[in-house]
Length: 153
Image 1 (cartoon, rainbow, N blue to C red):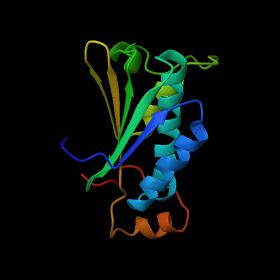
Image 2 (image 1 turned 135 degrees about the horizontal axis):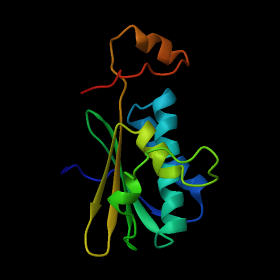
Image 3 (image 1 turned 30 degrees about the horizontal axis):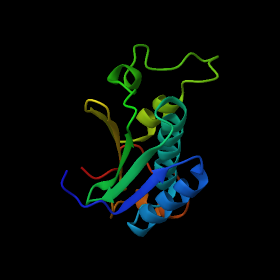
Image 4 (image 1 turned 90 degrees about the horizontal axis):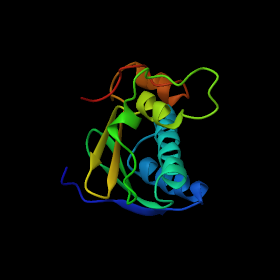
């Protein structure tokens, strides 16, 4: 992508601190409302998966461009695969008590990609800024959810 990393944080068991850093960064870049909440939820799920299923630690890199906020979660254990991200059946079984993290990430992010090297995996997520200048923006600014599909191209 070429953008300079604007936020870099280690992924540790202190997920509340990580969420606070991401929320502050994204807010400073202009992301608000439901889309900000979506980003924070996606980051929490990805970081939790890194701690539980990956190498037990990792790094978060965040940056912004004119389209939105980009988050890269780097896991040096390299255990996440495209099969995990895009498994058959798409939705976890309704009675499942686990397995919702990647599903949630795919549902609330505008773009999700997985980049692998020999021993490292990068989960790249994007949450786009709401479109500006549309009538829906007034409702969004007053606390209503962002209308589906109302994102910059």
